Image (cartoon, rainbow, N blue to C red; front, side):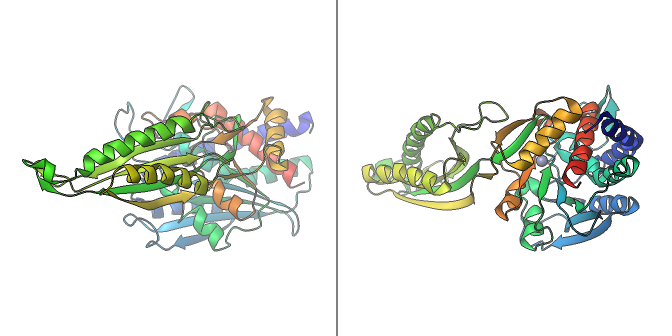
Length: 417
Ligand SMILES: [Zn+2]
């Protein structure tokens, strides 16, 4: 596109950036802490009102609360839509409005936003309320730029704001796709913190297991009469550490952001427990396993390898009973690096900002997986920084937010022309 287009986009973004910032600040001021999911109603109303004022067609969808962990407020999903023409492609900006608890170590008030030296501080600034506030404005800014440039757009632009991403997203993105509220969308952008230049187009899967060992209790003064489940657990744990070492040599062909996170891994003991009292030989002991699965693997394969280690252990430890419970299973997911949509995002970065977009693997899980599972191409790409997410003094660099907004408006113009 021409210089004229870039100039027009910059002018529109400059006109609205103050309002975007104000909305971001208002959103940070609502402590939507999850777990357990607080103040969702207030946040949803704030976003819905803003969308309404901007002229989007707004709907609010409440996901059943029982399906979630319990506690907190109503699970409200806000969807805004701007229709440009009856037929044509659709582009969707999707963000979560919940944040992790503030934690300690802040030099500002986590839920009192502050702008200082070109940065906006507050819990959720990078992950991802500022990007969500910008997303709310993207469709309207695209319409204004198109009008100025005399471009005819078709199709529609959607924005969704959802709860519960920090605890899995089932009542948020999961609900929107399961109920078909968001369906057949051509392009979904999830502006999670990727430092503007990274594009998470694939994500690792995971398998969370709880392993329970049963031995035999005895009085602590005559331990030989028992079978110490904790001791046996320690041995099994060491065997799994060996298994993890072997896994680290498995490297995905896709580089990761953060760098080096493209190896398979297994972390044990995230949670564990054993025994009843100091003077009782523990009859049971348990621990958890967090196995992260590469796009080149499957959770089934990963599970079989873990089970092989456990079966070997059982053979060597007669009398110890091992039970394995599945806590969570998410398959790796994504779209190829050379997918048309990834190319479009990279083109926007290059045309508008002169930056090279880097398609990479995300080691954690993202809401993109819900859309991809229903055949809707989705990537995570946003202006925040990953080091800021979940950290004290969380902030976002405002020039990056502005740049992302310009590239996002451009992307809408390009995809709906
Ligand atoms: Zn996030």
